Length: 301
Length: 265
Image (cartoon, rainbow over all chains, first blue to last red; front, side, top):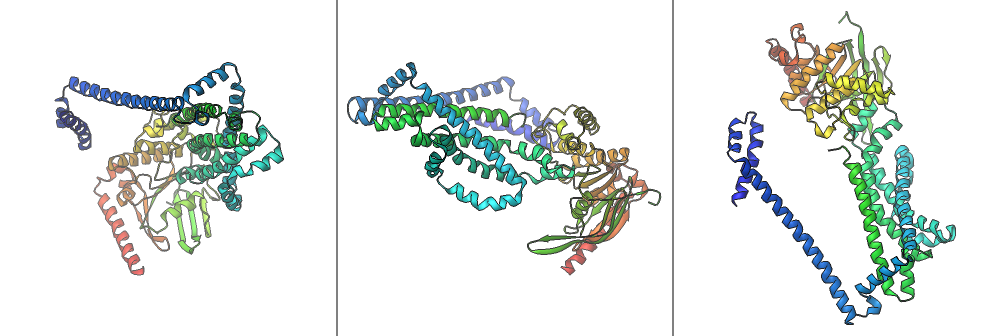
């Protein structure tokens, strides 16, 4: 209680002092709280926030351990059918052996390559299409209903068509992934292009800038944060596209492993593949989030 | 005015806004001439077409009839010859202060070294020496508007159109900037047209104030500011004994115009 009072007192006085123009008297009351006391309050605050952080992490680890322990016990004691649900130590064992003998890595490599090219290419193509629609407003109006229909379509349903047209393999899977990412990207980024702050657009026009200069100097750099956050959304969409694509056509990849494990009734393989997907997807998302942090905070306040 | 050449000219200009609701006459048969180096203010109630007149002079709008001339040539589109300062500073938040100030030069295709040199010199001139490497988000509103002034002046325009550039600022900052803008424009010999709601600002800064009447926009009165006020910086002019008379005259014209407008509407 006592701490709180001191905090609000010392927080309020410099502000009101500045507003009044000459804060001599107010500043005097601030200096009546000795420097050492302020340092101590800060130390206490930091200590408390560290304690809460540690408690959160502790509970998180406990939940994880409890769930894994319960699952392990349930599997070993036959509360659940281990053939269907497997259990953690079996999954870990399979992962250890398949990564040690190298049979896992080609699958990881293929799927990661497909996903990465899917979300990068999807974002790039979507942005290019958005630029085209921004440049030609007439085209944008013509395309609008088609975009809406295509966007509401479950794109996975187009999978069989791609397989027939593009064959079984990388290209078909990429095509499925692109249908999932491109249209959403186009719609989102085109809206951002159009909603650019009118003042910034006016400044470039008043300085005699061409449409291309307007795009290069204001529209595109001003949309970078949105483009990067779209990239983040596309990471998730690309994983869906790739896994579904691999369900349909692939002879390797993590989606193939899941389907294969399902067909031979090896659910340890299915679940261990899910673990690999979870790890790879999280790493990819974090990498893009890191990129976002660097680009978006680059200089701006 | 006879001794100086005409820099800006509107010849019986009308402008019509066309939209889905129909067409409305914004400015009707407006004629106006501003001499080289002159500072003219436009005041008037909302709907009197002040900003329309500035947009016509800047080339953002083409008149429905009549002619708009800058430096003797008809205005067709915005150009670097005519600088325009907006109410908001509209700095690009991802560019440094120096790059923002150099924006107009970059658009005009000036080489990088010349851009940096000119923008840096102008930043120093508006009192922002040493801030070139910072970003707009780190600056106060008054400083940001100074950057906007440097950006407007960088392509060396002959004419400056000021669209209420001080109205979003605190009183003290506003008066400092008024002094800065007037002194800078005078030293560089620029012609300026200021649109403002603030009658005191118009009286303190201008050589001549034009009062517009609304619906449709047309000139209601023209008030010349006495020479002894023109010579002074705006903050000094506000304290001069002759200032009150100019302000009162403007006030009278504005209130008379509003009363008429009220009856008409």
